Image (tube, rainbow, N blue to C red; front, side, top):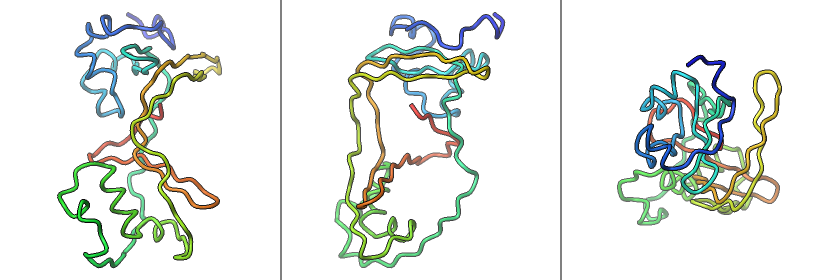
Length: 183
């Protein structure tokens, strides 16, 4: 199979077809280049599964992964009394949301974003959500546009905080991922 014979966006493929590549529950949640390595065929042809509905996906050559910078120097030292931290955050932390909650509760976000202490920050909406319907456009290297319709797609936003003037959306990683997928 030549690289040119593969379309930029495939037809919608179902769970049954996806299972030919491997376990569907493992294929659809590909969130980084490193998780794509489990599927050499897809990696060889530069294909990424993009969930478009419940149990369905398209395969695309679109560049969906955003690289994570090698180093980001936002070193912040914050002193917080143990009694000022919610007890639920003092246990072993293993999820992105808990790390981000700890950063919120301890004032790390205010310090990292240079927000004055007087700035009121609140939690925005985050977690697993369902997107009932959306139409997106993918563009190839030649500028051709490919519409993709999303129906009942689950998305996961790791964290969100808001000030009166700004909204901060967070995608966090607890592993050594070097990229993340936007969609």
